[in-house]
Image (cartoon, rainbow, N blue to C red):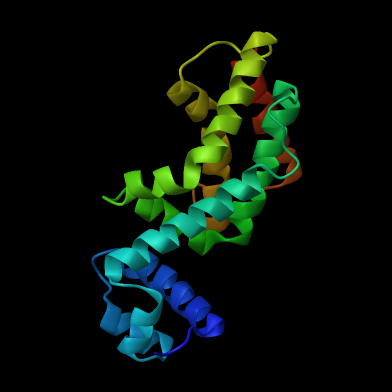
Length: 196
């Protein structure tokens, strides 16, 4: 039996992420992945049972890395403003540092793998954020609203700005880079919209 080579495994994961983002989930296969990674097809099957296993494992790993990053220096007992600011900082740092992983996560979160990947990677984060929102409402620092409306208002502006940043241009096509000043201006408007 052949042994696992962690360097090859990381290379395979990175190539799979690149290929999914470039070609879509259906656009790549194990044979092409092996060729792009410079390994034999048999080597892939040391790490993954099949293409579906590969996609699920990569999705879960990206999700866990993302959600672990979201809780760095964050506590559900923080004030709403401080906690949301920390969420913005953590999310922005991850999106800017790992744009390919984020693009792959977006692709997978709009696929048939979504429910499985979310269930396997989101559990702890979901309970932490639920506690944070509940505490913020109890302290009257956040208006009681549905989770969907909360997410849209709390993070929608940040993700729009991050998309412009990663593309290097605004919707008008002019150069754009997310500055601390622009992030702070948007953040303050979000706080005004969500606080009583």
